[in-house]
Amino acid sequence: MKNCDNSCGINKYTVEYYSGKWNNYDSLKLRSRIQNFDPLLKNIFKMIDIKPNMNILDIGTGPGTVPIALMERFNEKSGYKVYGIDPSSSSISFATKTVKEYGLQKYIEYKIGTFENIPFSVNYFDLVISNASFNLCTEKIKAIEEMIRVGKKDGQIIIADCFRKEGVCKKIDSDNEELWAHCISGAVTLKWLVSQFKEKKFVLSQAENLTEIVTALILNKKWNWNEFIDYKLDYYSLLFNPKKDNE
Image 1: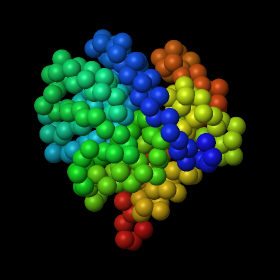
Image 2: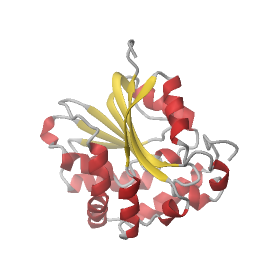
Image 3: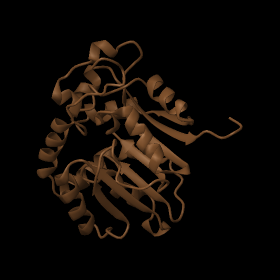
Image 4: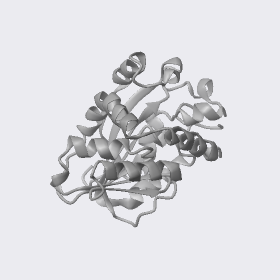
């Protein structure tokens, strides 16, 4: 990678990697995954103000962890709907099958799609959320533009992921495909991401440092992600809002 936006062309490997991973999943493993991630997700979800008739998009949904966890955190009778997209057809197939087993197909819908090409129209979502997936996209500026495009005029964006510390880009940069698939090589700095949103008239409204929570999940064998500790990364959940005229 040449710079800190970490654009590259190895997305094909990432799709194949996760397609193989979710092929070995079933509803019981998904249930375990949701429970393991609960300490992290409940902190991310604190940023969300659920309202009736909201449309929510989860990008990089994988097996559907975030949509189901959202439904369990906030009563589905609130009238909102969650859409999940993922570039892997096997992920979408598994997630669609599982959501039917949970009886939530009325409230959750999945489609094949990527950060760089979100298959929804302009001004569709009240909230766009990404947890542990933004670092996997290969064209990050395009991804930001797409998240803003599908969001409503007052729509919010939440990105939760690992971040490089300032000044250590070159030490982590690698074309190692597995490190990319594990969100390490594609990590950006917090400063870079905030600046890109600022250029597009979005402001950082809230930031939660979840590094200790993620580290505990790894040390307690709840998350197989030792590279996060090895490379001394941080994990933040960030809430972006459209900039108001008086800001």
